[in-house]
Image (cartoon, rainbow, N blue to C red; front, side, top):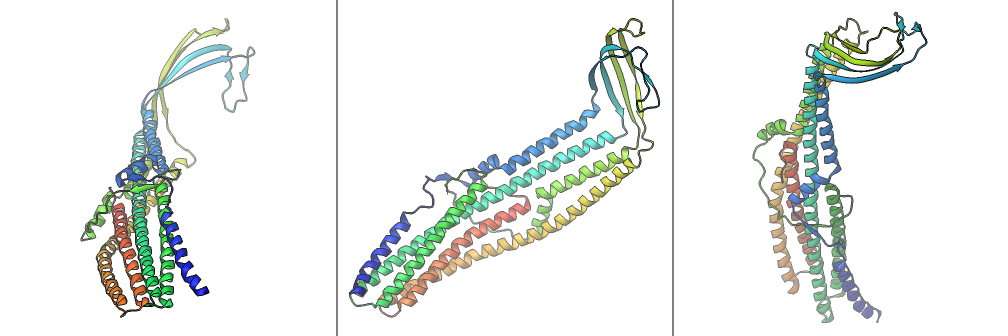
Length: 439
């Protein structure tokens, strides 16, 4: 009696579980259709890493104007109102000369113009320009990194949806088999063991479905982060997968990467900036020649003091650093060491890039070859499953053989789905290393 009740209740429980799983959606929000191009544009507009890099580049651009301003006239306005006791002389002022203080109220303008510093300022301007170029290349590097994350996350969402569909198909197939086996058991054409194994197959399919559903939610969360969104959104990728064969040779790819990779170009610009700093530090030992002029008026002064109501003065100022306690020499050596360190850093990074390109190329080649292999495997498991199903219906195959064939077919479908998106992501990584990432 108890076994009869169990046979009745178990199918009902399984039907309820299947209905529950089919009704659960990865996100209750209405999905927004999204192309890869739209996703890339959204990330470049919103992602904080991109915005931060752009602000840094703008700051470096202002540094060029800052360095160049030394060549332009410097005009300052000053005003002074002094009070003193008659005959006051400041004797302890930290200098060798005493200064008489004259009570007065004056306003005026001071003008100075650099004539020459023998190339120091021009080298500082060149350094600031190279720093700006370095920041622009760094911005391109950040943009490419963000785009790579968007592409990988976009394909991961498509992958998760493909795996979810495989899980749904597997669950449907297992349920159909259970219904058939249950009917045959009632007709005493199959045993209780067949029903039990069919029930176990449904449980396995349910676990696969829940895992695929969780993977879909995680992929959506990763896509939100890659887009630079601070809120949770649910997107429906609409782009079709396009499989294009990878390049046939890695040699030209390495040359392209060394020429185009934005990180390498940023390091090169940094070296140029540091070499300009070396030249500027070396030029600091030469004189600086400037023209200066002052003009103004003194509307208030004591009557018995010989001060004119107006004043004008001009001249040339020559500053020669005869001895600075070793500061100029130390700054020159510091700049040289920094430039040498940057050059070694560039060499190391170029070596790493060549290694990364080779690895990315091999990964892309392997992933591309896996697509055909997994396709053949899926066709083979399909054929094997059809034959074993026919044999099971004729009583020539066991439920165990059929269950194994179904598992193999499902695993082959999962492997093929992974192979397609693995290649697309590996190809994007290769393009990223080349500095040739596009969508």
